[in-house]
Image 1 (cartoon, helix red, strand yellow):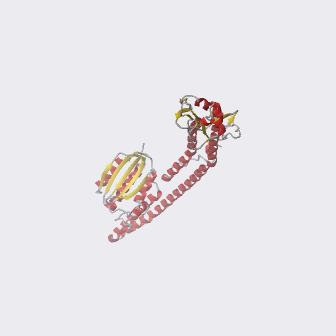
Image 2: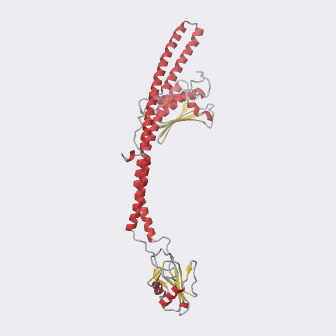
Image 3: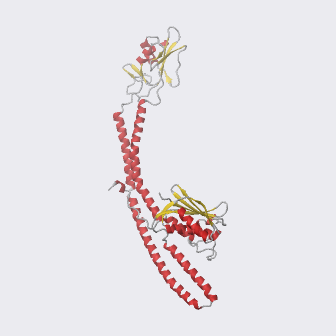
Length: 440
């Protein structure tokens, strides 16, 4: 079984074990190739020899003159036996010698301490100092000659090398971690994109069955559900077509029989019949859900908007073009024309006039149809895109239609991978904004 087809549990476990193995490998290489840490230390002989020299520094130990003997600093101790060793080594009386030091830790150096050593490792009679030491001897000429070891570094050379080694190892692992993360998340991202396409386009290709086992199962279930939905939609369309066919026949008979009726009766009934035909046609067109399923081609929204605005103005509908930028989208030309026309008709019906704007924003084309009407309460804005929803509750043809215009517009926008929203304008009126993906 391929790695990418394994369940997410096993992929994650393998990645974690791989990272742990790499960390252990780095630790082993660190132990093998880096030299063992050698702590800085000073022997009694080095201190005695440097104390006998003239004041100054030899790069490690510093000697200076002082009028009074030094005192023990915080954390320092003094051992008479160790001080006696220093006095014997520099051949001076014990009263003329001072020695203070910080106690050493037993694990620092593998020397066995001798009894009475004063927390300083001693080997072959030679004390070893690993921390700060202050030594002094009385100068026959007056004053004191004081030696002080430099304070230990907060980060030793070996620690610096270790940090660099781990840093380079982590840097070396970054490309592998990036590749593994990409391999793990790419199928999830593709799955999400495919689901998004199915949400906007019912005729989108099935979701690819790939990636971890969990995604394969989810993709198979989603494809099966999508297939069942398409079958249901086809059955619904067939049923609605049959209903439409059956309705046309009695409507035609009523229209034929009403011809012999008096004009006072015939006129209103024929108007009702025509209204019923329009309502049936509009309802069937919406329920079939065929908006935006035509051939996709580059469509210039600016040219389409100017043409529709001009046609509306020629028929007496006040439609003004506020701002037009060239914006090309890939889509069904007739469906996009219907979308713009529905928004213009909706603004003209309910507000008396429409204002059209088209803008191009990076990778999006934005269409705005606004009006200066009374607007809609904010809590009802989203409901206006639902089928058969109207802010004006009647279904009178004189005050509007069935409430399908905005619902069809939303269906077309979603079929093209876009979105639609409505908001009240600050100065009064309503603005409907459609965002569509712009063509490359």
